[in-house]
Amino acid sequence: MKNLITLLLVTLVLTSCGQKRAKSDQADDLPRVAIAGIAIESSTFSPARSHEDAFHPAVGEEIFSSYPFFAPDSANRKRAHWIPTFRGRSLPGGTVTREAYESMVGKTLKMLKENLPYDGLFFDIHGAMSVVGLDDPEGDLIARIREVIGSDVLVSTSMDLHGNVSERLAHHSDLITCYRMAPHEDALESKKRAVDNLLDRLESGKGKPAYKAWVPVPILLPGEKTSTRIEPGKSLYAKVDPVTKEDGVIDAAIWIGYAWADEPRNHAVVMATGDDQEKVGKAAEGLANSFWEARNEFEFVAPTATLEESLKLALASDKKPYMISDMGDNPTAGGAGDVTWTLRELLTRPEFKTENGPSLIYASIPGPEMIEQAVKVGIGGKVDAPVGAAIDARFAPPVQLKGTVTAIKEGDRHAGTEVVVKVGSIYVIVTKKRKPYHRESDFTDLELDPRNTNIVVVKIGYLVPQLYDMRGDWIMALTPGGVDQDLERLGYKRIKRPMFPLDKDMEDPDLSARFIPASDSK
Image (spheres, helix red, strand yellow):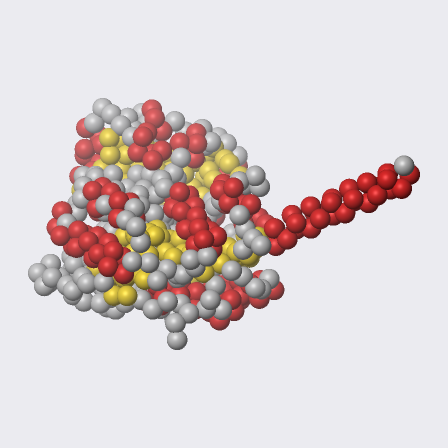
């Protein structure tokens, strides 16, 4: 009996060890997938420069917090051994300094080397980064990553539809996709699609797609004319998902491209990936031709006018708030965010000279000196300090702002300290560092009530969802700045020509699919 009990105990121990070993072996069979990326939209027409601290770099495990689909209990988290390395994401801004770029690339490559080998890489970028002295930074980055991880690793690239896809980026990316909505309400959905595509190909053993079709489309339009809220953008992007349902097609995407950088890669692109050459080519060509055929139908997503005309309409309206987009210096598109031209014009208007005039919120203008003074005198105190034009003074000099402090908020991730200075009936939001104002809470946290304000002027292009839902009425003002909507005024010198709409009478281009060699092809 004693021997029987001993035998049973030994059997249980061995069985338990076997189960643990089986689980361990099973876990070891999971693919090893790295995560990396550097993302910014940067205007070469702005004098601003973007430095490394603007990217709020995340390394290692902290990267997961940016992706809800990587939550600890999520299905995707359990499908691979994830190795998050370096991820930097900045607000749109000026050209990135070479020092900042090389520093971030160096950190990325170092972490990738330390954790070799990999089966896959989730490459999360924007696609419109400009770097001093370097064309096609994203293409350069992925090429340098390939030198570390090897050409056999499966790379899935996720991008903004306002990014640019060079042939080099297309070559080193095995799977590639971008957003299908502007505003980008599907950003996380698109990133998850890139991850799902990657995992599906690894788990199935299919690996790299047999074909990648790339079609450059000589169109360069601003996002304010290509929103998917209206036609023809709405119908154009609605054609993407159906073609991905074809057997033999993995994914397809349309990149509008980025209009405010003067580089040869800046133009629209269509790509499709899959294992059936005919269907992949047909998908890419069909979308590219649809885009080209609709080129003359693209219009601004909202009415546009001069600032003078916009104010006339806003002052005559009884709808609250009447929103005016101060488009030329839009920091969400790469503007410096400190152009004072519009603010200067507002402060000279007689309608806003007294406290009883129409209420107007201006969001926003950087002014470190004003911030320091406002914090010192406190709420209710009087201030008199310069704001704006420290970076971009081409259109107007700094404005000497004299008024009363009505709110102070410290510790914002982007702005640092924010204060509100009331001048007549205008509430000017002044920040230590530039900040886009996207949410109602951005205003209410400063004791402002935008819904009951007559006019809200925001440095933005098309309104993002919360502002769009809050508007009483809306117009986009054609103001000057580093992301001027009048593309012909920008003075392109390096983009490929002919290019629509700069060359309106150009001949129809060749929109046949160009099949890009696989990343591991010799």
